[in-house]
Every structure is written in structure tokens, then in C-alpha cells.
Amino acid sequence: MEANSAGQSIESYCGKCKKSLDHTVMTMEGDVVAKVRCKTCGSLHKFRNPLDAQKVPKPRAKKGSGEESTAEIVWEASLAKAKGKEREYDMAAKYRVGDVVNHRTFGKGIVVKLYSNKCDMLFKDRERLMASANVL
Ligand SMILES: [Zn+2]
Image 1 (cartoon, rainbow, N blue to C red):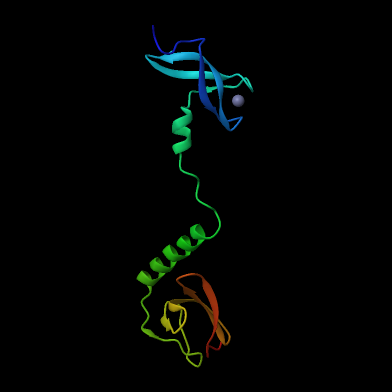
Image 2 (tube, rainbow, N blue to C red):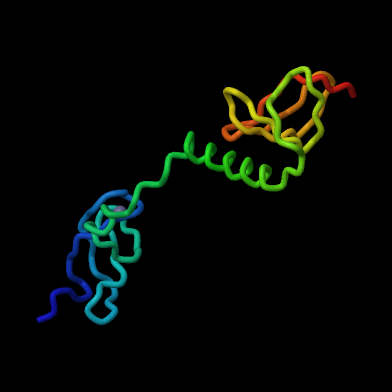
């Protein structure tokens, strides 16, 4: 006698109920349970082994790490493209877009936008508005 067959009860993870519940086997694919119907909510869905469902990695938190790594990728790409000379950050200096500055606290930054007496510099973690001697 087969372990599972259509019509039998089986424990499966239900995506609607969001937990492992008793299901009725609806279709089989060989020896494998294909589709099941949830006895609680009545939805028909693929069989999901409750043990496998527990192994599914939790989605990464959207806040924090994700954004930081995106900023870092942009920063690395900008740094690779930057053609300006690398120099120490000096608020009394004039900058051009693409200049690379070395900031004592923030590290390497790329000048991305100029304003009067200030400019946007992209640092590893985020963009910062920095003082400069630029005159527009
Ligand atoms: Zn359900």
C-alpha cells in the first residue's frame, strides 16, 4: 500500500493560513504529493512539506543593510568612474564633478553635484552636502 494517495490526509504548510495544517491529498505525481486542499480554509495549492517550509530562509529586513549595500555599490561604481585627482578634503578648495576627495571622517568621496560654496559628495554610506569654495 502506498504511503500517500489522493483523498488521504496529510500535513502540509498552507500559504493562506500561514501554518502547517491538515490537508487532503488531491493529486499525486508518482509517489510525490502534488496538490492538496487545506481542510481549514479550503484552498487548493501545491503540497509543501511542513519541514521544508521551516527551512525557507526569512526574507531580509528591508531597512538598514539593504539600503547601505546599494549605496556602497553606487559609491564603488562612481569611484571607479571618477577621473579627478584624489586629494584631501578642504572646505577652502574648489571642486569639479568627478573629483575624488579623502575625508578624515567619512573616507573617500566623489563630487557629484556643485552648488555655490558647497557641493554634494558621495561617500561610502551616503551622499553628504559639503562646504567648498565653489562659486557658481
Ligand atoms: Zn489553509
